Image 1 (tube, rainbow, N blue to C red):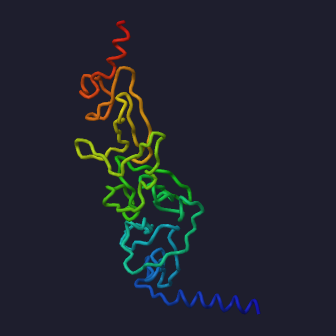
Image 2 (image 1 turned 180 degrees about the vertical axis):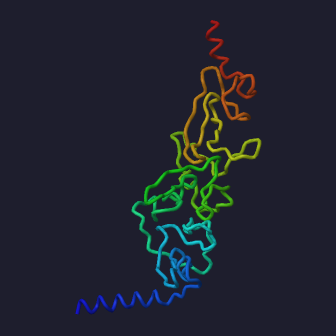
Image 3 (image 1 turned 60 degrees about the vertical axis):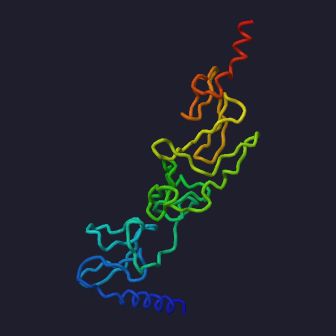
Length: 236
């Protein structure tokens, strides 16, 4: 009975392959349903093949290896894929570029090759877009939940504003600074725009909001007398 079952299953597999008709005697041709499945034809006989997990078949590629990243390939109606073979939370499939598993972290992503991940970071306040496989402006990526952990507060109540800050050239500031409300010698900065930290200027300097760094008091009108009391103490 067991041998009979194996024979039936084998026949079913052969029959499935036999349904594909090679358009040409030789070549590689896409499966009409599954985007990472294709057929290699030799003398008109089709052999089923699969792209490495995470890659899909692109019939327009002229090279022998026609498997590529999904964002480079128009699968059309070939929507089905093989079962994922990824082994870590960073690599849900063995190959490809994937978002950070924490939806609040949008500037970090992972490049996976054969299941081995490499952490990568978008620069300049950009967010990773899985559809294009690149870092793009936040409004282009349109990802939800980004920076949702920005509700973290310091002991004095400061938390990073949700709005992104840009420099004079219109570029997003990755780690923006903010003035302290009562202490001219201190300031806040937000790592990746979401993680609050407190900074301290060197002795004799005050924070200058206009240039986003510590400066001499003479250049910051509202803080020009910040060290006046200390100077008076030294003269008496």
